[in-house]
Length: 232
Image (cartoon, rainbow, N blue to C red; front, side):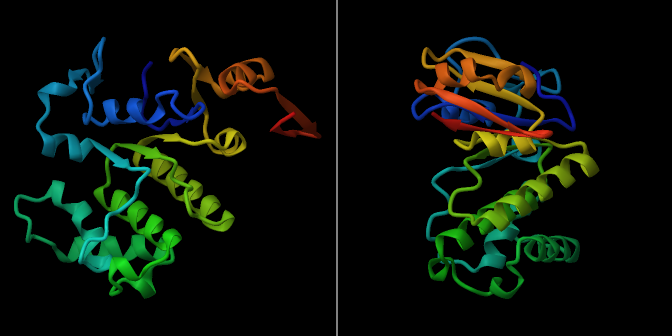
């Protein structure tokens, strides 16, 4: 499979199918058991950790640990792959981070310590940290965890704007078939045997494919020009 600039990818599959492992391989955290991963036609193993961080950013399912830091201090960490020094936060960095905090409704929380935040607020800080990193490829492991519906939609619009304006790409793992259908163009569907089906969402999202992947009957409900999937 190839993820090209400006593409929006979704990753679907039941628990234990290998979604997180695939994301960690693409992020350079795990080594694949076979094959190779190329980044701009260069083997990923030839990149330094800092170079990788300039190209690839990952939102982890487990979220942020309770760092003894404020929201602002945490999100500014995303800029460090672009610096020569760990203490080199510029005015441009601060302005960029302020803008991101505003996009995610965190501007009034920027001086709050992480341990005082709710689960949803912590998830938004994790997303802000990734946006501040400004990678070319966003890897997101269940990014809508702890987010209410409004922020789920806001996140999808923010990611789509990044893809459109900067030619970035994203691959997000989710359990929500309908969310992936609404906001992704291409999909990877992990089957029970560990083998993926890869392609345009119109090819992947069939009752047969989804029922096989999730080991339960899934049906498609259509109304006018839209449709949703649900377990029967």
